Image (cartoon, rainbow, N blue to C red; front, side, top):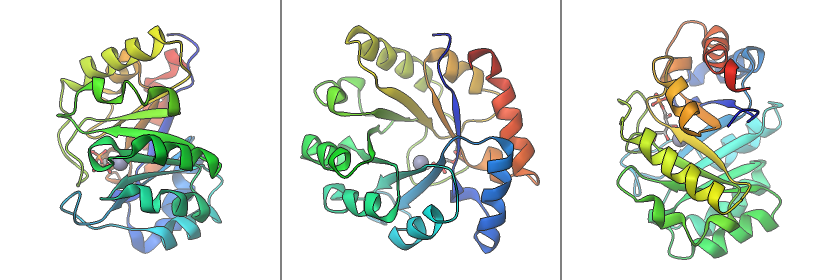
Amino acid sequence: MINRTIEIAPSILSADFSCLGDQIKAVERGGAGVLHVDVMDGHFVPNITVGLPVVKSLSGFTRLPIDAHLMITDPGTYATQFVAAGAQMVSVHVEADAHLHRTLMSIRNAGAQAGIVLNPATPVVAVEEALQFADYVLVMSVNPGFGGQKFIPQSIDKVKRLRRMIDERQLNVRIEIDGGIDRSNIEKVVAAGAEIIVAGSAIFGTPDAETAVKELRDATVQWV
Ligand code: DX5
Ligand code: ZN
């Protein structure tokens, strides 16, 4: 498990949108690896956030790859539009897509990395057949919809089981984790096998987003 690349992925959901550009520059200075953008439609999850025009503006603004986490019904209809808008990573919920294989292939064919997302109550086995068509799997460690929720501790064992499933198949699939991550639990999720660590309120809920990213990175330094 040594020599994995651990990336911090700040979630702009918790940012101050009135100065989003400044906030993104701060996390860039802090050493963020990816910019996580939560897209919510008010149907798949009970909240509405941002969509294609925001991804388009940000892709021309930041040097970080944009990771679009689609919490929408019918993600297959929209996934490639997010790639066209500039997202380099696009993930869809397994619970929302009856044609996951097709959607993953369409994301890859459009030139981006394809991710599968699992809600907390969705078993790891739900990704088994699709794993070879994915570049990463996102394990939700809260129920999607809102920032600032409490980390579900059983997610650590879930990440370990998913890591085993990926390693047994010798696949090059990264694990991302999202929800309730902060300095108190980041080491545990990284030790379990997660490599892309999303954090919203632990970064943008503090007065100094740059330092918050640095501190999360420092907590994982033994793994880098
Ligand atoms: C929740 C979103 C998360 C959220 C995480 O549905 O997918 O990305 O922003 O926020 P925190 O880190 O505050 O739990
Ligand atoms: Zn997210």
